[in-house]
Image 1 (cartoon, rainbow, N blue to C red):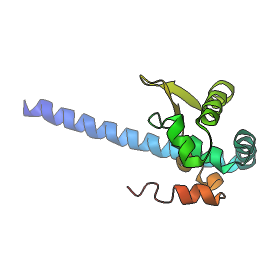
Image 2 (image 1 turned 120 degrees about the vertical axis):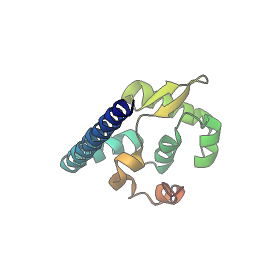
Image 3 (image 1 turned 90 degrees about the vertical axis):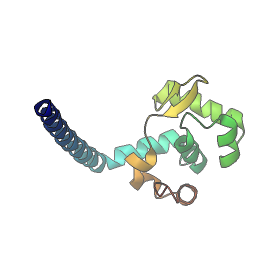
Amino acid sequence: MATKMNEEIEESHWFEEKLSKLYNYLYVFSLIYRLSNKEIIENTFDKLFNKDEKKLIAFELTNGNNTTRQIGKIVGVDFRTIAAWWKNWSSEYGIVTREGSRESYTKRFSLLDMFPEYVYQYKKFIKHFDNYGKE
């Protein structure tokens, strides 16, 4: 019994080590990709969000829980505008998906997590998410 438990523990440690290495490789790959494609990424986001901080904030708040009305109130636009942005981001770019029983939209990635160097140029965006990750 103890031998079987020891084997499972060793296997668990082996798996954790491999997962940690994979995470580090993915992080390095992501960093290299972002650095080598910085101009392309920035141009893509400029086109996608039109350098509009309201759109950037609305995108970051698109987490599957917030409604169009909630996000609209936060960013200062009508809820129909949020719905139109979601529809465009979903059908044209695939950066949000419909999930859950309410079929709310969820972003596929976080700008703050994946592309902080892009969003840091927007003062309103940073002010809104000033405590991001500090919870």
